[in-house]
Length: 309
Image (cartoon, rainbow, N blue to C red; front, side, top):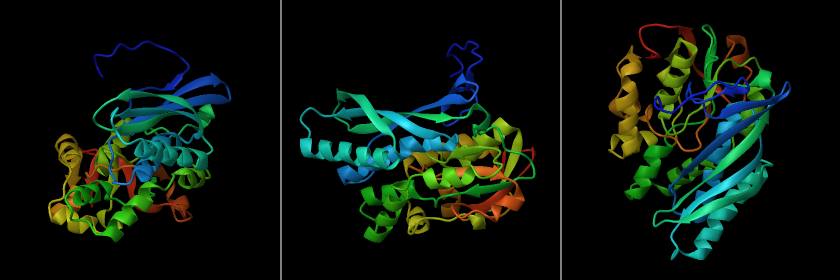
């Protein structure tokens, strides 16, 4: 990204410089657009569920900025010889989640590709003064999270024939849950920084927030919640390639103040699909949350961006 040309525009409130979840462009003193794009290959067997999860994942970036989704465009790669019923199910799954979010689908683009890929470009709205960027974390705030961890490990276990149906169902339910309610609750409080935890895993996205904010995020590992079966499958070696990449990239920013089992440490880097919101707010407000729970705190910048305790 360092080679991509940059030019000044006073209306660009959030660009790609701080690795935020979406871009924000000011239209007026009271209105800004939130724009994002996300797509991926199938992570579940059922085509309707895949389409629905792809929509939830794409919408999440708008919620992470404190925005309201209003419109979307679909992005599809599908083989010309592929099953049309499966294709219809993918599109229907995505459309039903977009409808749940009250986000209109305006159209899209498709290409012939032997490897299926699906997702959306989503546009939302937000007041320019109420954008929740990842650069706003403040020392002294509590750190809270809204979903359980482990979708990457469970998806890998499914591909290897290791995963129990009940565990897959729990992970699927999590991935099908919009971050709308979590966002609505978040906006009732004085939130500092916010991001959603997706492909870079908890540590990767926490690192981005800490660096952008110039602070250290202290994460209480025992306060984290994992999806059923995630710890067991990680212990058995169902580790996705993305987890290994995340660890290689981000572990240099982590200080570990206690001994952790390998499987727990791995899950902190597990790439999430349609993961939860990670945000900061005053300690006094954290106890009032129903859609999130406290997982740590923000401190003044120490030697590393992340400290595991």
